[in-house]
Image (cartoon, rainbow over the protein chains, first blue to last red):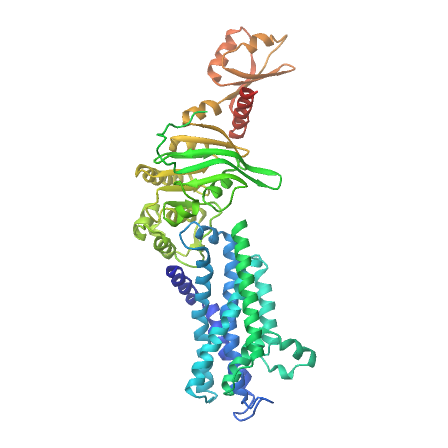
Length: 246
Length: 309
């Protein structure tokens, strides 16, 4: 399986478009969004500066991009072109394919998080304690597994033609409604009511609780955990169904 | 039907026992029983839709039979694959995009429990010169060779090939079969599906004829050719036609007279035509044509059914 992970990674790092959108794009968005506000203005009700607030949003967004975009499309296409079948003729265990894809995405999502942090610290002068930087990296990285599972599930449910629009709708829906692009407190009430149940909202909220040196809200942890079970369970079920009919 | 003799103590490489697989109302494989023994080179011959691909999918455990059992080396197909005893190249098998040929072959080698060196695998498959090319930039014939390389990445005992020469031109086809014969000469069991009788004839020492999911014939290529080698003779006769005399022609397998036109199927057209002139008639518009494989299968089917009833 290591050989497959290595090859998946080599391929991901060769794909400049994918690297740009998952590694550089979130940092660029961060700099654009935070440029309009001074280094002291704060986001209402959080006690965090705009730059500090947006840093978590964009790091989460970057990790989301890295784990969701590449895999859903690859899996749908490789199911269709028969590569998944070909792999079933090797000793690689069936779940090895999904694990390799997830591991590959996790390796790309780490730099996308770190690049946002470096931009925030170096250009927007965001200051946090050492433990906060480490905890943020760990939480955002680990939390991205929820969306990696979603990416796998989409890859098994969508056909090769439909996978890109489906992924895009879910990706932008989760990013914008979940408050990754702008604080959800600026939304109309009805959208705020939707937003607080979205996994992306809970995901970014976990990161912000670290910035605020607060214990994470149990509701957010529970929401993420439930989504993870749903997505991973769905992915496993779809994977098994696909194996039987392929 | 003849069955290749093998000592009863040998574990068959492939064992199908009363295997049936249906899709809706279609019986893709219908009560198929067969055994392959070590070292055999076997062609699975049949027209499109005969059930060849389904048979290979069942054999590799990619599909499960509705009834009956499939075994490889006495165990399940998956066990045989995990042990590295099977290498397979399927029509429906895809390749990983955006990696080079060398990387993909290297992956296959590292997944195989008894791998060969990737460079050797590529050299044998004739793809060493395109090792650095991206997989998605290959021609159909080159992609087939890469698939062949993936199927022969390690020291497997059984090689399965589903219509391997699809997309190859004549010279590539010949080079491919030369490569494949090397595999067989190393003592491996080789099973390949084809719809070309000539390929089966040139390569295989045993031919299985599959039609509508059932095994129609099992024998040497020569035996199958004799069965499927029937020719069609047609001609016009003037005046009254003595059908009884025509019916008595040698090697005639069927006859159809409509108006002045006579259509005959013969297992030895040369002898039949020679005898036809011996009748003292003057056939006009004489045509002798080979039967297509599809018609040959129908002819074999009818012969089998006539035998059974």
